[in-house]
Length: 182
Image 1 (cartoon, rainbow, N blue to C red):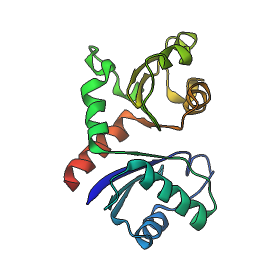
Image 2 (spheres, rainbow, N blue to C red):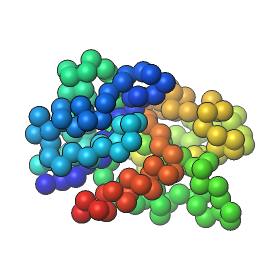
Image 3 (spheres, rainbow, N blue to C red):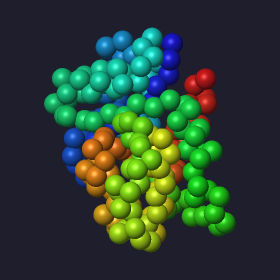
Image 4 (cartoon, rainbow, N blue to C red):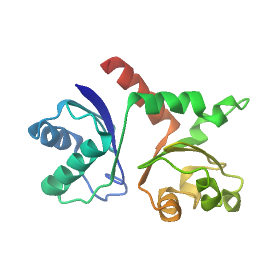
């Protein structure tokens, strides 16, 4: 049995693509996922399954959400190693007196190329900062996520990927939950 974390993009945000987490849990259990556990309303779902391929798990969840709720919801599926790498590789955590409320992680549907940072043209968003690490982009917003154009839509458009962003508090809590499941 493999535990996967599905990160759903754009649900229950500003009244769009509303899905109650209890209904999502029931729907995913009905198609064979086990030990389904959700965290907050923004679409963080742990599932256990015999399927080891994260992309296959994500596709199955995406299909079922469309069938059950009528929403086209992008899904990025990650494992505990992805969350552990967030703590190990986030360059902004090394900064003295870092305000973790300004830290975010964009989880990307595919591994990014070394040239992807150039494609993002992050310098035009200064003083916001970003750093790429495999299938993650570490982000440090100068003011806040709601006051920048360097967001999930921009990342997706520039890199032609699916991206979903979580704040540092959520990333921390999701790793704790993963550790409790193991």
